[in-house]
Image 1 (cartoon, rainbow, N blue to C red):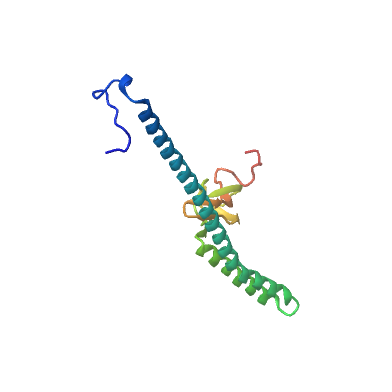
Image 2 (image 1 turned 135 degrees about the vertical axis):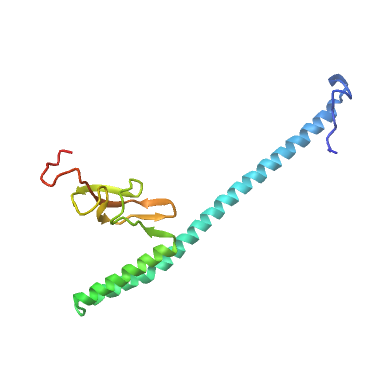
Length: 174
């Protein structure tokens, strides 16, 4: 049963209900409402604060993972005269693999594009090419890699797409 008085149509008409009881019940309902509103406001503030703290912790972890890669780039630049171009190339490849590993650990993957059918949701065509040895509307070249995280595209790959309808000697009026 409830703490507030029960006013029903069968029990009494509105003229016989004590106004003091109604005032008390109204005051109790107001108090409950204000407590509930304050609890919800505190919950909303706590959730916002927790989300901000979690985002900051994730950013800090990502930066912490990125620092060894920056250290390797600094070391590569520091010994520019002492290394051959082959060693420098190898060092850059190793650093690139580190970056790719870091992105992979954070759920970020490179978009597979070369040789794939053109997909406007995953690729951005920046030019067309003509290669009769390749199927029509297939990606011939990747100008800039694209990246995704799960199903969400972070950046589409910029690609050159095969267009067999365009003859090699035709103008660019298309």
